[in-house]
Image 1 (tube, rainbow, N blue to C red):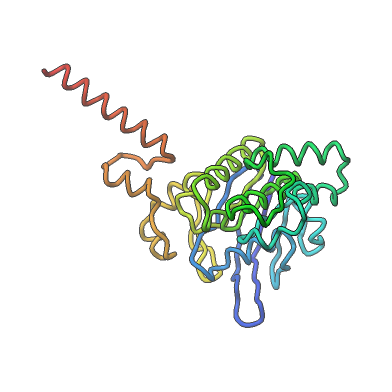
Image 2 (cartoon, rainbow, N blue to C red):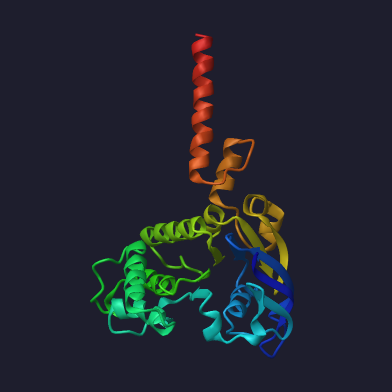
Length: 278
């Protein structure tokens, strides 16, 4: 089943086109990413999936339903959206109430709300902070709180819009953990990010946007190791791709663990040759 299908999607804010004929598909259970320079239409596209924007032309289907006929509230039962700035999402007096707000408004019973709040805070490393005021948290903790608040609504599709801007390594590690866990549960994740290393490490498939159009798409290792395409989108090669080139590896690694395995195998080969030819 497709989680998302965009068909010849055009959108204008009034002057010029922010999206120009975008057509793409995201299967359920996949981690997909949208990358590209500022102004390329990444966030504009993502806002169509939660109903914040409606197509000027074309259509967007979320789990088979046309978003034109669905309200933001209806889509929020299936799609969770974490915005770039967590301060734009936080409004409650306590961390607990912030995370509980979504599931309460979706009509979950008290026991289910309690379960979702606890599991979301645990996953984001915020246990023990239930009674604290959200704006007394660090920026990284607020980012994690915003994600926990969306996770507590139990979405089938989670959209993370630039989740690592200005964040520390601890928050980035938590985000990677969340993405991998959701994928393991068969849910769909869409990353909107400038962080090419995060995209490379977490995603299965990537769409490259430029000036409102999709200029490239495919498996993440294939697309983001293409220097011409990456340069056209004003991006940089992932560090793992650069490392593999410096090391002269035969294949592009998919993770740090993959690089370590390749290097260990090469070290073993060299050692065996040395023992065989003392």
